[in-house]
Length: 408
Image (cartoon, rainbow, N blue to C red; front, side):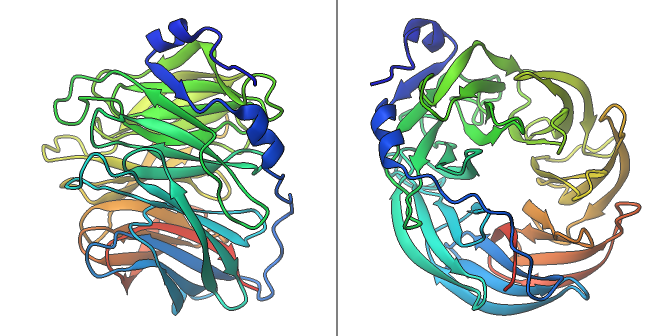
């Protein structure tokens, strides 16, 4: 058995606890998934759009639409029932879909664990078929990511209580498309100054750097970007902490989602509680803050809540949502020389609580969901200026996540 905690006491001091150390067995039992380039769509510019929802209201799971990028038209195809699939990921071969089951929710018992559900996907028919579901090993899983080799799936467990607290978990992916039981659970510890939001650790995203060697786990509860080394042969325990441990963000800022540019030189972070986007320089597993920009207009006094963040397909523009009383998507241009951001504009999402959004692969459309007003809006996007215009409404109960995949 490989033991990644040879310096357990030192890393517990950093606010990290490990569980589930059977890496050697996990590596032996988890077959490698086929690494394939994305197949070309049979109809160029036609995609399947998968929408994850909260299911306490009008929705019952994941919805599949056919999306025509030539005109922005959306046609419903199918749906599959699963509870609170609030975050989705699709494999590179577009044949497998994984969703969190975000439980117990704000009013549920802290003893209830969330789940990870696996589906196979038929892009020709636009249908999902349930494979299996496993425990997320924590409360309120809210994010998913693949390891660089797509052998493992990681989830961030936000947590609603100190026990079990904020964590991330690692799951082997099976040849059948199913997801295996967790082989590793890493708990963070500590909190921050914002009462009610930072009383404990709250892991909100798990993101691999483009070099494939490092994992960053963003903790809203204690204002840290934790850094881990990824070693797919298990020689360092698969995922292991680095000596420095983490990048400290400003107290009370609440780091949420992190993305990298395609070249792997810069990263961008939304901080939910501060309502900001931070530009960071990345090199050799290290993040260094360069710039902080506010999402709100000067003088704004209402509630804020920075959410999702994505780059345009060409990397020239960055988009982020801001919830609370703002309900906007904010657009920045990206300087190609130093990665810094410059405001382009702010656009109402025409509803309440925009959480996630997606830009279609052609870069001509952006869809954003309004969680608390049962609507999504598809904006026409100008690839040259980054600006948004001509929104068209899609009515759907509590939409919270979107994924485009080529249609066969």
